[in-house]
Image (cartoon, rainbow over all chains, first blue to last red; front, side, top):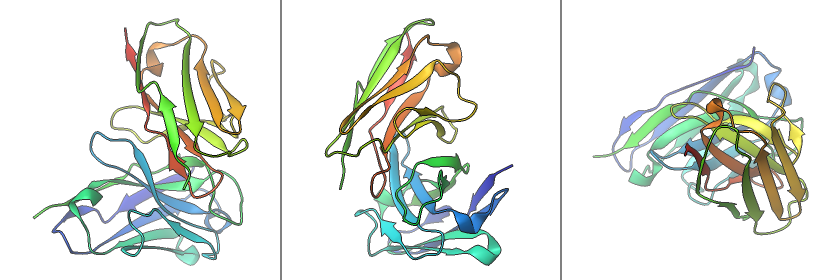
Length: 123
Length: 106
């Protein structure tokens, strides 16, 4: 059974940093691209960042480019999101999501999602 | 960046109704489109990928069509468990989502 478990969310002041983690199991982690998708309270889904199976292809939404860094550790079956210079508008539930198909890049649909970790940016 | 526009933003329907949701891409994306269902407090669930392929385990009353820039999700006979919010997502390049369509009870 595929499982994605996010952690690391919490309340943080504007301008500070936070690191999210996603622990994956139930599939061959290093075969698939992985992504972060967020959802602000009462709002729609927003793709944040994605990373290919070997970290050779990485992408970011314009809203987080230069502030967030995605990475993965295939030996630990883990995905990460380092979030710096956080803003109030980064407040959201952050989901880890698995790419549907084997693909050298990061363009993908998502077949499995975690339950999310809540990040609240407020003073 | 590719923008995805969904319509309507909400629809009121009754059990047994046929419901159609449309999604338009700002540029051609071939068939690289997915549809998701999200219920309150839950993660999104993949329904359709590659515009018309039904994800494993998804009931056959859900179907998708379209290519290029215009796409449709159809629920042939709405069931009580189908009241939810639906999102389209392009998978042609860096992913992006439509704004969502809330299917409400009439």
